[in-house]
Image 1: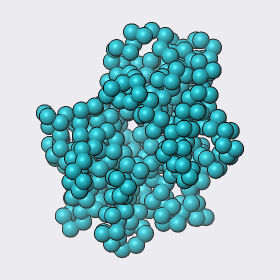
Image 2 (image 1 turned 135 degrees about the vertical axis):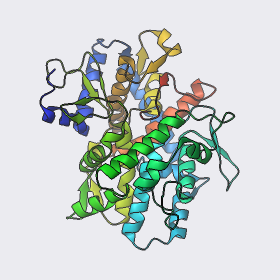
Image 3 (image 1 turned 120 degrees about the vertical axis):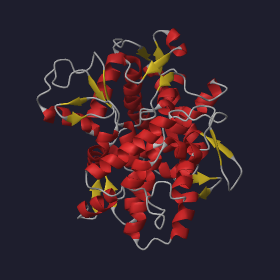
Length: 405
C-alpha cells in the first residue's frame, strides 16, 4: 500500500466511504466469503417488522425525533436540557448554541459503554439509571456544576483549560463511580477529555462551542450540509483519538484493517466507521436548527456501528457467527471479527431502513435514517438484548478503551 497520497486517505473521512466499504463487506458476506460471519438476508423482513413494531410502541404518531444525544437528557418525560436552558437565561441564540455544543461534545465523548453494573443516582427522582442514559444525565449534571469550565463565573461551558486539567478522580465523583459502582474505562474517558482540551488549544479554539460559530458563519444561505459538519468534526477532533492509524499524515480516526476489503486500491484493507464522530454530528444538528439554521443532506450520514444496532442483527439471526465459540471470547475492536460485525451493521441498517419506508409508504425525506435509528433500530437492539439475555448486555464481548463503543 502506498502511504504517499494523502488525498486517497482523506476520502476515508467521508460518510460515502463508510457506506461503500460497509456495502462491500455485506456483498462478501452474501457470497459466503467473510472470515467470521454468515449473512441470512431471508431474515431481514422479520427484523424490519420487529423494528417497526418497536417504532409503533415508542412513537405511535410517528413523530420521531433525530437520533441524537439530546434524547438521553429526558428523565420520566422531563427534558433536563430544556430545564437548564430555561434557567440559564442565555443572552442570545449564539450563546445557547455554544453551550449546547460544549455539552454535546463532552457528553458524546463520555458516552462509551458503561458496563452492566454501573448506575447513576438521579438526585431529582431518586432513580438509579444505567448505560447511555445514566452517562448522559451524569454529564449534564457535571456540566451544570461547572466541572468542565475553568471559570467559576461561567459554569455552563467546557473550555480548553478546564478540560485539560480534568482528572479521573473528579470524573469518578461526577459519575458516582467507585469499587461498589464500577464504571468501565474511567481513566480512558478522562484522558480523552484532556486530549480534547489540548487539541482545542492547538487549533486556537477556546471551547468546543467555537464550532457553533464556525458552522453559523458558513451557513451563508441559511443552510448547512451534514457531511460538511462531519468533515469539520473529524478535522477538529481527529487528533484526540489514541494510537489510531495515521497514513500520509492523515489521522484516520475510527478506521480499521480487514484483509478482504478493496484489494488493489490505494486504501486497500481499510474500513472507516467514524461512529462517535457521526453520533456527535447527529447531536450537533439540533442546536443549529434551534438557531434557525437548516441542516440538509442528513441522510448521507450512515447508521452507527455500535453494539445495540449490531446486536439487533446478530440476535435476530440476520447475521450469524461462523464459530459459536466466538460468543464466549472477548474481542479487540481492531479484530477482523469486530470490523466485520460493525461494517455489516452499517450496511444492514440501510437495508432495514429501506424496508421500513417501503412498509409505511414513506420517502427518505419523510423518514430519514436518523429517525429510523432513533425509533428504531437502537431501541429494538436494546429490546431484543433484554429478551435474549438476563442482563440485557450485548451478544458479544468487546475490549474497548471507551472511545469506540
